[in-house]
Image 1 (tube, rainbow, N blue to C red):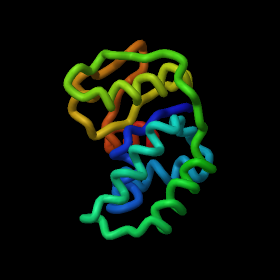
Image 2: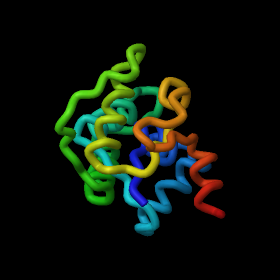
Image 3: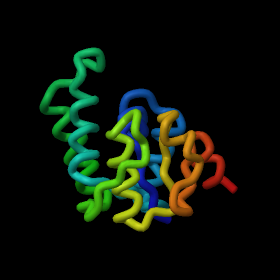
Image 4: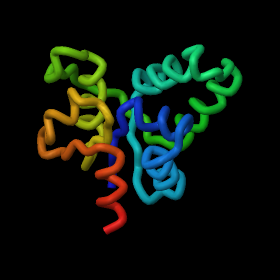
Length: 134
């Protein structure tokens, strides 16, 4: 199964654990493939570098390198503008389309409100983990 995780999922998995960490573990065990773009990786890096998280550039670079080595990288060939309130959410949809993803996993209300986009279900980390357990 191919998924695209919104930036908040891998960041949350690294920093806080819970369902987001469980998803990172599924990815690391190759039970699911997470698809990203360089834009999404850059956004992860920028979030992890926020002062409030206390990570230095070296550690963030190590995390992003691990993501780059573990996730499937795509270069979206189309620009999508479905979510008008937050253009960053459209980058996730672009990755989902380019990577032929089955699901989008996000904690972002703008994406979750869509419920589904082009037959791609949009789930919270908790919903995704529960679905994988059944």
